Image (cartoon, rainbow, N blue to C red; front, side, top):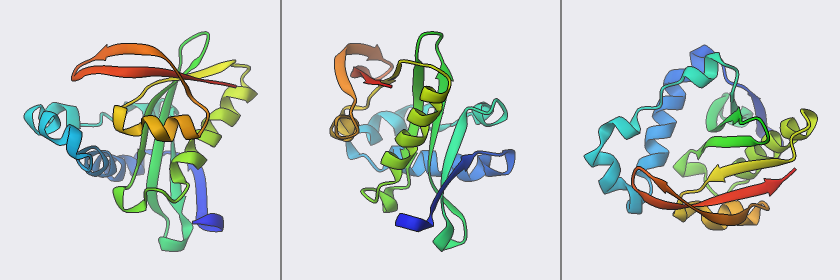
Length: 153
């Protein structure tokens, strides 16, 4: 991946590609697939965060500028909430998620936030811990309980 990865703000023309990536990535986890297919509305990424300037994309410049991951955040007064973090299933374990978290971290620092919080999918727990997030408890989601984590900025 290396020098070919670029992070930039998402733009309106990215939305269809982001929706497809969201769906592919969501369905790639066997542990979530049955619930998601039983509730197809959970596979619909709204895209409104793009117009609001809250989504960044990871582009692989070496593959013609293909989007290989994205992250969406929102400011929750005292912290930044990492709402979405998705990587193309064919490109996992190549540093894309780590680069996206790094970009979110840089923006949080720049704006004076002290922490980033996320409700983590249990299958992503090891990834989040590897980039510095710490479990602080559990929360209830639509499909059960999930770890609630934070990353000091």
